[in-house]
Image (cartoon, rainbow, N blue to C red; front, side, top):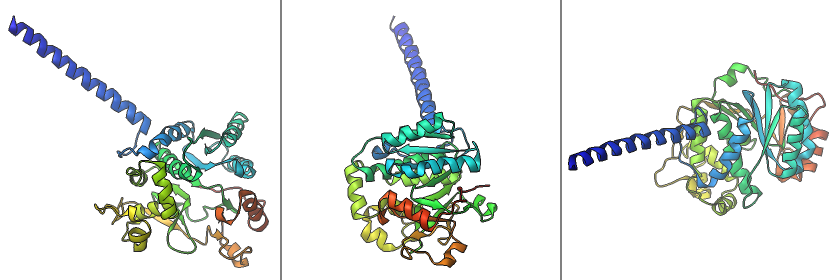
Length: 337
């Protein structure tokens, strides 16, 4: 009797182990489906977690291999039509615009545009502490989702304007890299407001490493404090992950943004040493107002786009300045071959 019961117990325990293993496999498969087919393993960030789901829903709505992704609120509505019309006119339906909307007005605008036949999709950025923290977290979640799902990703902020096709450099130059960033005129640091990322193992690992910076920032209140004490925190964090503290201004790691240099020194060196990346020459996408309200005539020989900093004024002023001083009527967007 004892042996028979013990045998049943052993068999039952074995079935439970098998069932538990199957459940783990199903859960793992579901997690991989959520993360994307080629998603790198990374620790989840409590701060980013609420943005990941909406960002991935947005990217999954986009059928094209190449996508322009951005975030905006309704204050940039004066640029929405230009963005959609130029993208469709230049690419047809081969490239979609993914809008991570910061308010309902922007969300409804792009959803109406989609119903009218424009190649676009939109999703709402979750609510948060303030616009600053929402943008910092949502931007990284969006870009990571796009590369994880295999998209050739063009990220641009809505205060960036083009006056001619940007990708006039040899296409092979771009294809030799995992990611290319625009640069700041005033220094060698990257400009996180415009970059192109290819869906490679290198770029996926890089943006996963960037997301790991946020693992220990467990609240938007902490992120808000960091963004004030370490100005442009997201950009500096990306730069440190990219080049390591040895490759950027040491003061950035040791004085301004001590959070980026932990006791484990994991950001002392580049987070992804074999990442292939490059800076787009700063003369190709300069910043305003580096030279004041007017640009030197010789700059027009080289500049393909201009980044009008949000600090230069409200969106309506930025748009008016760009159209008056920089953008030409024939400029319709950018091209990747």
